Image 1 (spheres, rainbow, N blue to C red):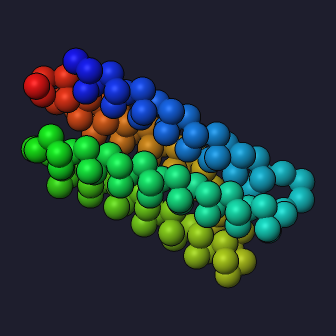
Image 2: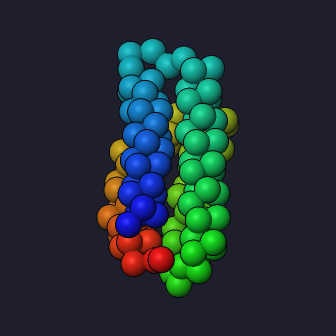
Length: 128
């Protein structure tokens, strides 16, 4: 049970951090004026936080021989690809595309957590 508790604690902390960055990004993108430097910084922080979290989680899955690693990692890869698309759109000035970034990513992350992270937590709870 220690595995699942440690995973859930770390996971919750990481998710809270990602949500905080994403929420700030959402406010920056929908505010009355657009501060491109702050948005670019928030985008990079969001991507770095996600990459670190996903890397740690994938190592955990490997070390516990998690049978759904491939599908879980594929979901991580999809999330990062969506974020990278939005970063590219913002970099070339397509703010209308990036304005929907956080609501879309938040929905995608919620689905990921409910489906993949919950399954992993269940698996870890049964791992000696």
